[in-house]
Amino acid sequence: MIKKFQNHFKTFYFSVAAITILAVAVLAFMLFWGNGLFRPNPAATKIYFADNISPTHQLLIDMFNEKHKGRIEVVPINLPFEKFSTNERKELLIRYLRSKSDRIDIFSVDHIWVPRFAKWTEPLNRYITQPQRERILELVLQTCYYKGDLVALPSYFDLGMLYVNTDFLKTQPAYESIKKELDNFITWERFIEISKKMNLRGKPYYLFPADDYEGLMCSFVELLEQQNSKMFDGDTVKITTPQAEKALQLLVDLVNKHNLAPKSVLDSRESECYHTYINENGVFLRGWSGLDDWYRINIAPVDVLTKYSAVPLPYFKDGKPASIIGGWNMMLSKYSSNKSEAVEFIRFMISDEAQQIMFDKGGYLPVNKNFYSNTKLNDSFNEITFLKKIISTGVHRPFLDKYTRCSDVIAHYLNLALKNKISPKESLAAAERVINGGEFFIK
Image (cartoon, rainbow, N blue to C red; front, side):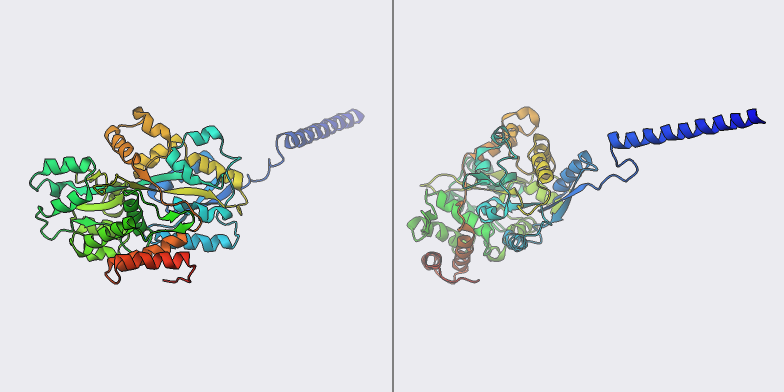
């Protein structure tokens, strides 16, 4: 009986010892290998990104989220170009940032707005190394600085160019010679002259966005730059000049004298012009790089590169070719609570991998030098050669704090002149007076 009791006691003793050892082992494992063993993994840090979220943007967001699954999740906030004009998008972001909310971490802006938005952003100096910056095209990177600080990084950039309805042009006499002229920088004078020899059959000859907004400013600044003329003299607007009057007079004449642009352009922005160009089988269109991808997204998923080709914009006979550089830059909100994670996404977006996808899938122009120097990266040698030719004529709008307000005023008066409500001379004088005189202005 005693022996049996002793055996039970030994069994009990060994059981207690085993349970104790197991408990200590589990405790040690929790201490040394993470105290979250029996808790669910913490949620990924959410990064809110405001931009025009195209299918290509969404593809890259999905790629990034998969790579950083469980740690970082980028949540897109879509501000589509089809719904918001560039000006409306600017005002929407300004109102939001003034609230000092941390609900937007990264936002994209037209690169000409960088000085306007700099006060709401976190400088990227300590996040982006000099070698990383040197990988970016200089003419694009310079749009990312404000008062010596790197305050943005480019998502992609645009180039102003002229689109040609090649199918229609081939039906015209002297097609080959006209196409050769177009490919090699045709003058405005010659551009107008050849229109008189075409049987347009009611088709619009030239479409350009001429509504009261920033798109009209792009055409105006291009025409100024073609004459080596600037909008600003120091910090003062100076547009009561022969060059500015010549630039505006051309735009007015294209609509009202030569009847080469339909009056519908006076209330049209990029998207409306593109639709008119496609629907009415127009001949020429002032647009931005990537018309074929815009067509696939907004019209039909087909390749139209054989129907519409791109050539340099016309220029004044006594001037030089000039094409506005556009584009969108990513900025980091200084109110973001997750700056390090947000910067990881920004770095990803400027990587060679992401930039190649932006070009291949969305037609966006890459910002990295490597794309243009290493033709082995892609099969688009002819397109790259063309782009490099346009880049060599690239010009910027003025990078000034006050540019956005000045642009609003000038575009308003340019549009009035195009509508024949005031003369070009009166238009430019009124805009200059309102801006330099600090007059109250409301559209």
